[in-house]
Image (cartoon, rainbow, N blue to C red; front, side, top):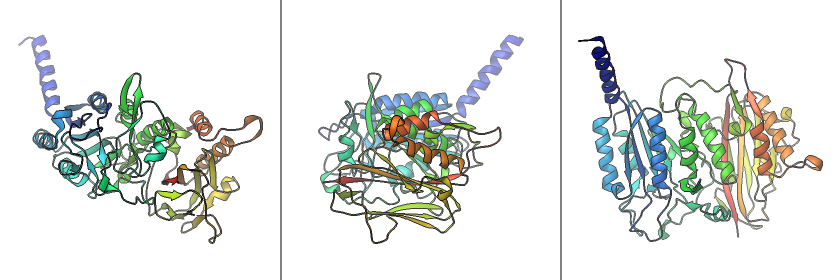
Amino acid sequence: MSRVKLLYAVILWLALARAAHADKALVVGIDQYPRIPGANLKGCVNDARSMKQALERCGFQVRLVTNAGASRQGILDAFKAMATTCNPGERFAFVFAGHGTGPQPATILTYDSVKDTASMDITVEELNRAILSVPAASRVAFLDSCFSGAMARSIRRLGRVGMRSRFFKRAKDIVVARVNQQDSNDHLDVTGKVCYFAAARPNEEAQEDVFKGASHGIFSYFLSMELQPGSSWMALQGKVGASVSNHVADQQHPTLSPAFSSLPVFATSGPPAASSLSSNLWEIFNRDRVDRSRLEITMQPNTTSVRVNEEGFRFSTRVEDTGYLVIVEHGVSGRINLLFPRDGNVQSAYVLAGQTVSFPVDPDEECFANTQGHERVRAMLFSASDVPDRIIKAVLDSNGSGADAGSGYEDLVRRMKRDIVTRPVGQSIPPFYTSDIVFEVGP
């Protein structure tokens, strides 16, 4: 055999070997819901195609299932097929873009779902079992749908042309949604074996919008551009979350299964990923690292909706690690308020393990909202002072007075985007923990 033929044979063998052991992905997009009048979407198939391309760039072999092929049985059969082709040493990814409903039960809607019953839906428990049935070294699920409609009114007030919710509410599904412990995806996987990266918190709606003349899920649009191996899940969540939050004025927040935040993208076990040496403050602000044994913010009453001028509420933040605590409120007026430290001094943000910070400080007082709208409260606990000091300054400056007066949320975003946090080679952003609550003030 000549050297040229031998070279071609080796290249062919390597290509076949690589194909035989490529990572696998199942990508589902559903725009059409023929058995649910008025439920059709416009951007889910576009999302599926863009996520297919993004996963292929990351080395995955992708099976694409859309619309009529994505019936309940069609999706379950696709999982069975993946279980026969994926090897235990490979990675597996699942993508779903379409309607979700919930929260009891939380389900994804299939092409043949019907209006008045969930019999053709796939529950998150069924979905999790199907993902676990695929033999793989790691399993990841990207969900661009939502499982609760609690925040619907405030999101619709945005009035953006082309925006549409990916939540379908059956009349019997009206429940009182809870505000506390909503910043986690642990409800999607009790086994801890699947990393879920979802478009929104359980009490928010995932939105789709028009980008460059085509409809896309806001989450999928930014995720498909940022998805690449090498960084940590937390860094990816920060980048995508920053873009999504900015696009919808802080009313949708992609969330990540907490146990996987420090791991490399596409890994669900193993050593932590190397952190980026630089990042703008806005991306850091939008990263989640949820660990309620270290930091937890709660609201009383435990509901996502309170009535304007009628129902009072309080916030409490429990800290179990010594560090620097910052609590920021994005109020219904659009103003960014620094709840802690009250004097704006980073040294006043220093807290001890076991400490609880409450707002209002007086236990006999409550907060009341005099305007309808959407509100978010975010707590962040840092082990070092420089990043919280920069966040405090950005918040105070965004609501400043005089010649450099700020304009609330939009100005906070602008200031944080231009503030680049860098570290010497070999050093990373100091560890931190976050906790969020999102609620609505209604009539």
